[in-house]
Length: 268
Length: 351
Image (tube, rainbow over all chains, first blue to last red; front, top):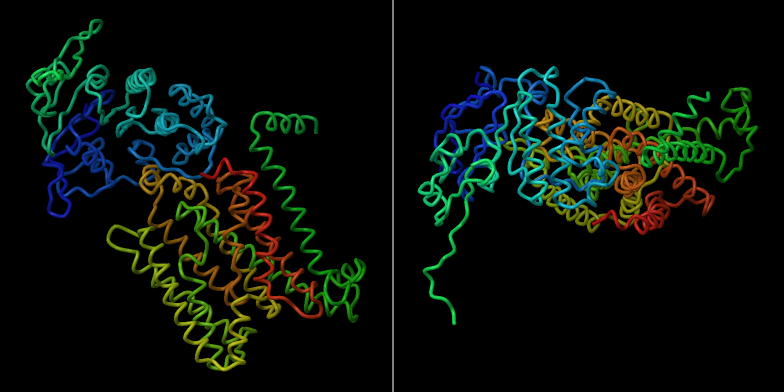
């Protein structure tokens, strides 16, 4: 059953098309990653879905209801969005940042506390609860925000169907936390949440996604299971770079590695 | 009793910020109480505690002390407290809306516009009109509202209100207003010039019962109307799009904030002239103590602003007694050193 249905969504700003008409459906519990070079329209696509920028044409449905027609508070219980840049100058504690996520709910402070602690544990930020946000590193801040959006749609009984949109959730994190958090997002999706996110690291996207959507110049180039989509020809064309695609020794998922430019004469 | 104590112990152990919040509440309440009593007791005529209590309780029906307390000092203390509270709360709202701890009510052009209005009224002669309000007050109020309206209209487009444009427009309107007041200073005769510059320093010497009641009414209305927005204002600190994704009607919230700030500051300036510093520094100081959560910050700012202006006004009346200093000069005189002290203590937090 499709939870998120996007039909012919396109975005044009100052007569410059940023996103060509694009359709996509995401079912409950599915993780879909959007990959593509810089300026391909990944973030534009996510922002048009979440309503941050107005789409020129097309529509977005959340369970048969157009997204714009859902009241903001009801929508906030069903859909959580993490943008790429989260500037916060004020000295909230880590816990206070995460606790903001529960403001659309009326679940009571005891339950909210429990949910925030669970989300913080999932994102490995429990130890940051009493630290002040501006004193944290970029990666720690990012993990706190991830915990916040997870806590926002933590329980199925608060909302019914749930959707999570993430714009480069793990880009600023170290290797260990990248995998730890992608696995946590995967487990979160398994509770029935649809996840749509942009990812820069193709290998990471391939390891943790059910499907991959490849964008280039605002066009949908390919969409499907990682093994099907990530062919050498396609990756080389989209990213304008010669690559090897190797199977992961454990899982067989595709690993993308750039070829070293050997045709250049060696320097003496 | 013992369980209450234990739970207090528990919160104390679990969260240092919560403990600091308890302490700040107690300190603020004590400070407010003391400064209110001081404002009534001190002045060119010193009154004893018995004089004050009997006057306030209506035991003393004819005396000299009763006249001083009920007709002069009580209205003035209420006016000082309410103006201080309104200015500090408006500063808190603006700092939240601009996501910038340096924002203050003068940033959106209210104060500058009010100066123009007041100067025009003074040049025109500025007599008293009905209800204890003067033409100068009316001019200041209208001037403040007109400039906020201008700032707001220019900053509001099809995509809602742009906070950055509002900031720039505030600078433009303030510059325009400054040159207009300058022009009027240049054209004014000596007596008007003196009145205009005194007005700009702010003063509560025009206090009377009706002004005090007007301000009390505005403060109460503002706190009631905005009481449910503190949480939304917190999420706004994450950015407008994040606030929207957390279910906040961002456009509606910003409109509400602008209207209340314009009204609050406009009326404050009308009854007490331009008093700087309170709106900028009180919320800032309290944020350093208890954190940026608006659910505690707004009521604490109200208490803090009230206390600061009460103390400043009492000092202004007492120092050169029987002459009065303009209270706008004294607020900074008390506030600035304390602010510097806090900045030095919390330097690591301010990047």
